[in-house]
Image 1 (tube, rainbow, N blue to C red):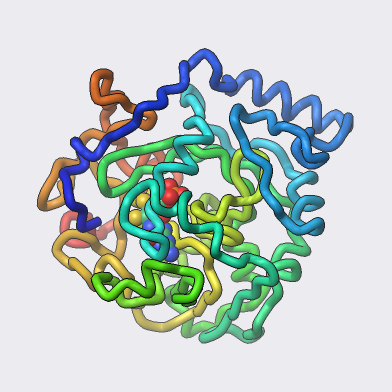
Image 2: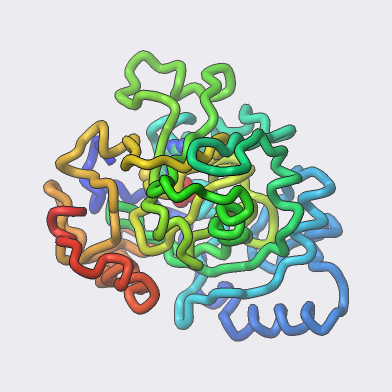
Length: 336
Ligand code: MTE
């Protein structure tokens, strides 16, 4: 992103939650197994505290609460990774529609109205239409997937998402043989989004993103409606966002209102602002630096100024085994 300070110095994390209180993967697996054994709904579905530390109550509609209560637990995990505390994942955000500071989305996104919500699906599909979110989700059992999230600004987190594979939705609307890319669009509503009212904004709204069709159909590509056992907070992209774990976080477009199947590579927000810095592919790649900083390392949040939690960045954010074959023969230096 075009940012005012270098990413290495942008860290103001003061609340460092001791690692001991993170739920370990083993503990989570245990919780999942207990639920799979058919005991009860998870506590949060009954308005209780989530199994994740510090999760705050939200206001999802009843149909979504019910859906979140039937999650197929832990479809994908991140072995050996500690889950980022909820507070960090929900108070250190990029959502420029609500301001450019990391704390702005949590402060301002309450104005976003997420009910009712519908998604237009159009372009090269045999079943175009405007679908109510409830109908979009109806056929699916949601999965919990713990993914690393690597921002192009060189910070990272580990987030437990709740969602379903984008591929399932795309198959349902039946792409035509001309469809080669998928384009996504965020809500445009200056009345509720102060960033869209700002005359200083260098973004041409609405925020837009895109994937090649085979990337969109990849089983790791997720449409998320929740995180940390409950619905998405507004600042994280409620009620529907994209998660592509092997790409930089800016591909993860929030509050999606439109999905178009198209023949040509679509324009994307960050590429159109600074094409030398942000490419269409945006695959996490420690060997291809951003022109203004290295991508070889990342700060895993929370990361204090005096105890920086720095680690090596992994090729395709650690998902190379699953996705490298999508890019056989492609020059990843040119196609960054
Ligand atoms: N989607 C929209 N509509 N607007 C944005 O500004 N920021 C992107 C992405 N999706 C953004 C967006 C960027 S730069 C990142 S790193 C991730 O959202 C951050 O997601 P998070 O705030 O949930 O960590």
